[in-house]
Image (tube, rainbow, N blue to C red):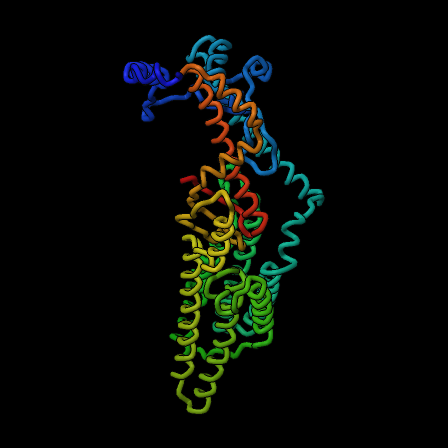
Length: 466
């Protein structure tokens, strides 16, 4: 009985139905500008459209999921409502543009005053001796690479002082060159200390990923400094060795910083599950590597110079001494080339170990909401921090089920039964479709949060939906 009306005129009933649906479901050209569905925050509304908090109280408020892991949902406004309110408050686009320009000038002057006041406050504290060292920086130089660099600065500084004192009393040109060499080493280590200090700074608006690469930059410049000063002076000694024999330098102090650096590298390599060789070759700790390699070259250079001076003393041939200095210069040049290469590789963005990438990928693939992981990129951004990026193919059924588990199924069934027209069907689909998209975004946030919690070294996660 129910089939007879449909069987009599199936085509005539179907055609009007499809025609109505096309009229309701309007197609959009995605290449055109469309901002009617954009949300903006209260801060952006006040900054860009020069509105007051009281102006926003009259607008529609929408609660949305926060983009940050540690905050709850926050309130946003429709951009179209904010634009209309701004025109109502300021009267025209021209008046709004003038107010924006005026506020921009005031903000620039305000920022300049803040910077000037902070500088004056620092000078005032320095003058009265009330400046307290930053606890974070102080802790940085009491352990790990910071301690190694500080030990090297102290020892190289003492070397420079005593060599300079010897030059004052003897007038030896060779001793003066050695004093300059020690001064260059001290400045080199001070540059490394500056890099370590800058690397622990917090991210800001201009540098959102922080300053961890400052260690690599300082080590790169240090490598160039070793080549220019260390290798250059050693080659100079070699060329001038026939006229001015090189005095032998004590191995005690240089060996001290070398042992401190080697011990620190062994401990850090053990923590990261790497061998000593892998840790040095991958430049995991550039500051300690510079100290270790520079002091290793110094120790080997002294041994080489001593052997060549011995040969010169035994044979009376000054060429051995000259060749020894040239060998030391070549050794320092090799060290500087290695440091330049490894730090350049690190700054370019080096991938982490394949085993670690596999571990992170498997964690994501084991989640029920994930079908597959593609285009994985995991790079070391310095200070043992990792940036992880991947394309994720989500299981739509699992995501939809996750949404339905939080809904009243009987109510949804009742809403379906109430649908009588294409307009009502469209509204029903739009409502639940939007909610499912929000659920998908929540699943991305959940995966990113769990990935960071299980792997503390992963600081930045970008999961793209396929």
